[in-house]
Length: 608
Image 1 (cartoon, rainbow, N blue to C red):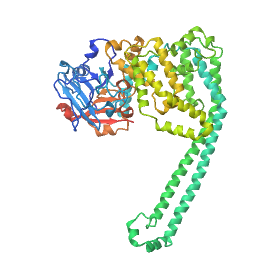
Image 2 (cartoon, rainbow, N blue to C red):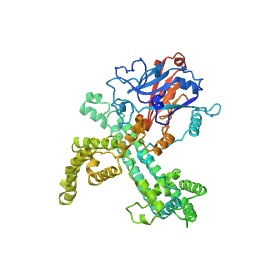
Image 3 (spheres, one colour):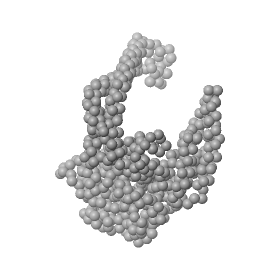
Image 4 (spheres, rainbow, N blue to C red):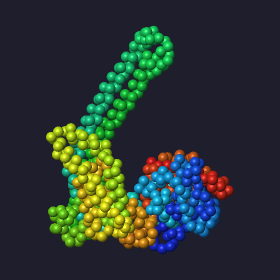
């Protein structure tokens, strides 16, 4: 239905100063409820706070919305679909409201398990101020939901930088950018050349799979005939009086008590019908697999001449180029076109979507010689500088190492994992042939607790928000390398996380920490996050406008005729997992909105 304009709620760029903490609209953190009591669910348990919106700011951006022109709305949720919307008339007149005791961990309402509590031990999501952006959607008169959503997404793309990936330390601390070397184009040419050289194997693999599916089809047809024959025999036996004889021998009472008996009247015929149905489905599925590989082989033959010509064209374009010279803007555009054309040959190139040039550069970089590799010294000095810079240890706060060593000690405290015990017992039963492997595993198990304790002792007492020195960083990576190599089997069985897991948690903590901690983040990383990470990856945080559909439009249909009061979606910077990329949607009818009946707000939750 037509309604108020779409209002996008984005994270405000972070800058040091009081303005950040005194924002009037925000995600996470603690609400400001004045004297209003923190809402609880029907069982008396405290709900979890998600966001508080300054209605004066909404009125300034979209005065035509039927919301109050002052005050604020605070949104709460609890597991099981319970929700609360609190109207706070003068929310900035008092301090943040402290959450009551006994709050459940945040993962109970879809929070990321890596953030069950904030740094002070409270069950609060990270605090992040909000900017409100009005979107006037350019959708044609009478547009359906899909067309309006497409127009809304286009309007978002015009106003904001969009991202495709979660925030990670490797993305923020990637080092110097990879230049637009001609080596990137040569890398694409090499990929095409490899696809052509690998074409006979690709063909052979297709023929092998066709033969396999043809065999499965023959097997399905044999099983179909056998199943029908067996079921038909049962029908014939009943029709010849076998069923009557059984009832005479074993008594009418037992037959009546079990109408599902194999000799019950009509049961053999039903089994015959079911056998025919299942057998027909199996044959149909096998026939579809055969047809799929027949089409694939036909397509492989049809595409090969074009692939050969395309590979030759790109090879001619790159031949004689200095791999370390920079491409012009026209050259980059040509490379983008060539990369897009690789999707015309997906069976050979394994490329089903257009690959961004930045990703091509990343893949090319991964193939370059590293400082310890032969050939590295032969590279130009500026190329070596880029490689070394991108491989340099990332900046580290001690907080990450402290978290990681705590996880190692927890793994030790749990004792031997069942999978490790099973492996050890199998090796022990393997006799002399497995003796060496068994000895290595026993050495790992014996030494791992001491390694974990030494690692933890090294981190104990450190200021968690101090950046490591270069020397400390070298020692850290040496310990992580030992864990990866010397304790690989034990670490895997204990499900020890990658170090990037606490690194990511620490980075996200720094983004919303006090100014003195936030400013330890390198300036280029702050600028990048303020530029590229203001929105979630996919589902928009918004008021009004077109709701996102995850499992069809069932939620929107159930709330038909209502306004989308608030939508909050999966957001890695907020530690909002919300199931699997899910969302919360708060709805209110026009009548309840006009009466300011916030108890009338309903909530839906969806995820993949």
